[in-house]
Length: 101
Image (cartoon, rainbow, N blue to C red; front, side, top):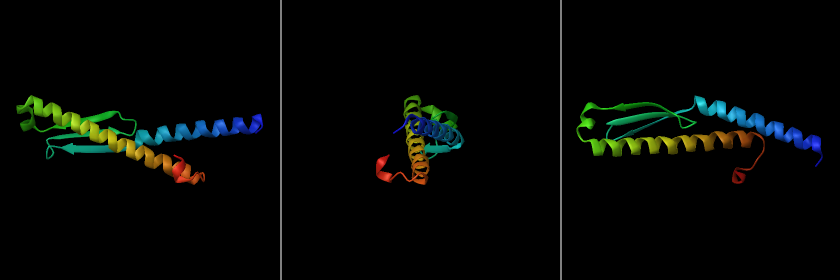
């Protein structure tokens, strides 16, 4: 493979990475736990955007801490799944087989 082709491939990979980052900023996932006692919203870059806590949930601090952890972890899993889905779509459009990513 010559140097020019390799440089073109690197530029294309960098452009894809930038596109992916932009898309993931726009993605928002939400997780609700404890029957809606805690609801978190996170973007695809795993930046926490909001936390809503029902007033009654604050009565038991240890339970509230557990609910917050569960909600954030679930939102993080959803963000990961969406990132994988987005990446699969981008790679699929380039002809990369699904088993390769």
